[in-house]
Length: 85
Image 1 (cartoon, rainbow, N blue to C red):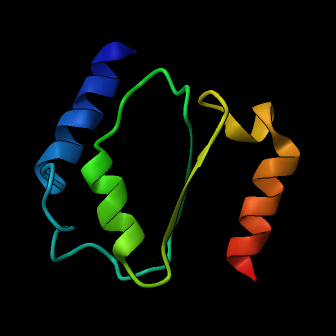
Image 2 (image 1 turned 60 degrees about the horizontal axis):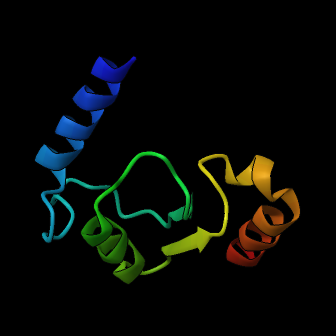
Image 3 (image 1 turned 60 degrees about the vertical axis):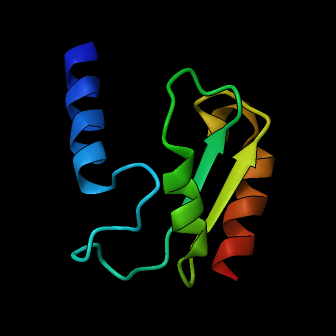
């Protein structure tokens, strides 16, 4: 399991190095990235800032663990419906 996660993180770092903009071939699609503040695995904050700066994209930190929709279903639903509106 950890090997798969490390492969994914390594691939992610090659596509979007910390502190750099998205790769040129990244799809220009609106994206919502919701994450829990107490998430046990780390992600690159520079990536989240770059995503938030893209038109139509939003990054939301919730006071939950990894499974935001399980830890706070009503809060997740509010975030999702607000983004879709």
